[in-house]
Length: 292
Picture 1 (cartoon, helix red, strand yellow):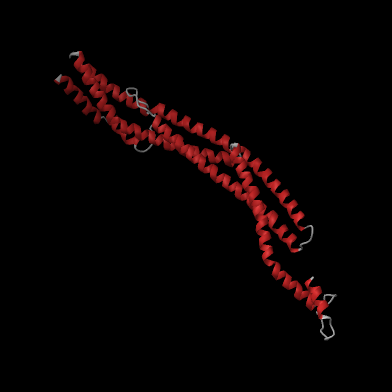
Picture 2 (cartoon, rainbow, N blue to C red):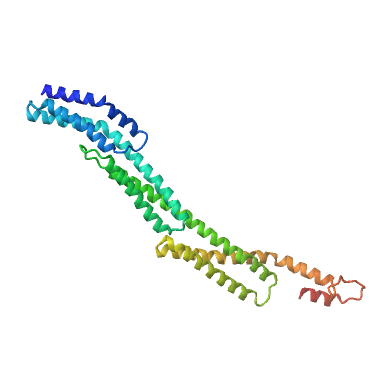
């Protein structure tokens, strides 16, 4: 028992001073290490083989137990390097995903299709890296690191989606504001019996155009029906809000316009020339006309 334990301790000590292992450990701090699993498996395998060769003549039960202790100790020793590799693989896959996703969107690929394709590609890269880093003698679980990557990818997709949808909404709101504000102001400026029917027709036409455009742009996002309908309804409400705001703004100017019109009509004759007061004018008639 004592000798088997001594052999195991010697092999453990030899391993901690093994230059190949030390180089691997150092490299694992900087980034993914190609063939990390194969290289480390080979170093561990040599260590265990040396133990087996030196302990072969001792009691099988004892040497097997001490070998298990040696395996546990060395795997515990190297596991932090493996976890470091997983962290690098996750970060690398995430950065590649962001770059590919942005490039796909810039090239005009539909948001939903680009997100699914780039996400799967990132997970494939991560899975391949994990397979390349697995140690034969260990049965380590990479599911937590993979789940963390999935969460990071989904959060980024959600963030970009929210940003893109916000940009779309702002763009169509700006178009509506430009298409409605000026014409409505002009219509209210020269108010007559056709003013409000004209405003309603303008509102209907521009709203339908904006809703149609936004519907087309939203198709690439593959939103659920409720979310899409909510966005379209908000755009319609925005259009009505532009009309209401302009109407209120113009209503506030009515009194000023009435005063200006009264002053103009009162102080100018029928030829729009400044009135020359002689004292013979019919003030009552002029006042009535100016108020009409």
